[in-house]
Image 1 (cartoon, rainbow over the protein chains, first blue to last red):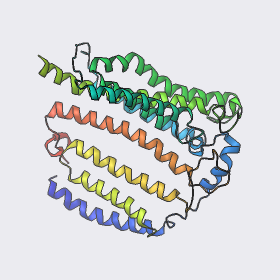
Image 2: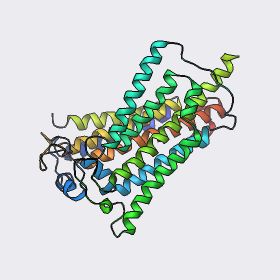
Image 3: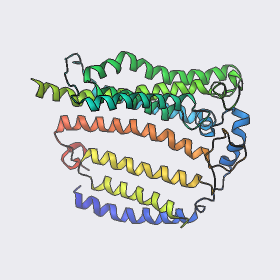
Image 4: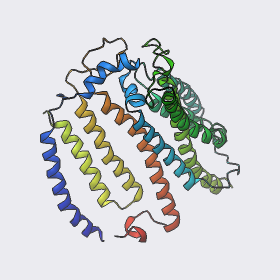
Length: 246
Length: 114
């Protein structure tokens, strides 16, 4: 199908879709007039029931924990797919690709430390204050990526080693399921966090098994994102270094 | 202006679809898909907003204070992270297409011709 024909087919479809969108939007409640009831309900019961002050995290890892498990496996599947497509056998070749500028190095090191700290804090307190394993995991991966930005490629290969990241990615996803099953075996519904007791809501010692699921997700997400960085970097840097360096 | 956020969501969605239909590059196409997907985030967060509502986090805030819907927020936050990894998978496929066919234009890839 030519480009012109494709756009000609698209225009009537767009008209129909646009009409349906307008119809749908007109029927929605006005902005700011949320009708509920689930949001209101959860905001009232999540803290007494699940002992987490961050209701969003309680929803992610408990009330909708089954859905998040699916998301977790989409992540695992996508990362595995990228590794399958891009990972090549010849990885041992020496690559020299360093950063020359001292300013970049200094700023990079400060940035890496600060970002790592923020990431770990977001994960650790993810069920108390804003944050969580997904958000913190990405920031931790970003902090570790700074090693490539401010040092050199061989240092990056040192921290983003396949032998560490691949098992971590799998164990993160597996840990999520194991914690869910632990609740089931103890007689609670799958993925509820009752197992370890309520603790003191608003502190790190609260939320039962919630914090453990949170850390499992954090490990899976940061390992996954680092594997993605690593595969694309190998794809990008190795040909440049091979072509330009010799 | 109470429908304005919905209009923004619809606009982002349609712009993304337009980009997909007229795309001449697989990487551009993948990014347009992400734009379309982002419209759902705007839509979900819009639906969950309560006038005068705070964040659904009750650390230092009395339980029962008006807060926005936590369900849509949790849907959006997991999807933002997962969609990035899926985008990476699509880009890896695009890279392999470039290696095999030597082009990123969907019209020049025999397997993608309708």
